[in-house]
Length: 113
Image 1 (tube, rainbow, N blue to C red):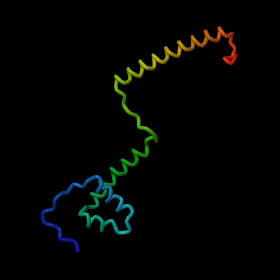
Image 2 (image 1 turned 180 degrees about the horizontal axis):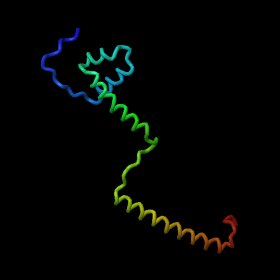
Image 3 (image 1 turned 90 degrees about the horizontal axis):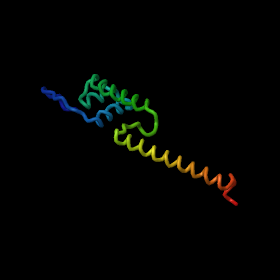
Image 4 (image 1 turned 135 degrees about the vertical axis):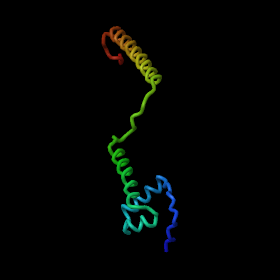
């Protein structure tokens, strides 16, 4: 039997894990929601306040694309990447010139001669 409620009810703060446990139990349990609420010392409005952020979080998470979440890149990292890209483009251009020279020397033939 449940202990009688005290005359000085205290508001208790539930952890996120406990709230989620209550939410899951309310959604999947065979027992009436009223029994769960009495056992946990909650009101139906408390359960509604638990359900709303769960719904919002689920919709937000399900609305994102799978894969790596987009992140912010610092200005320094962006500048470093741009510099690296420029260096690689210069190297590619140099190698293209070298390849053209080598092809001219071999009369455009294959390397298997």
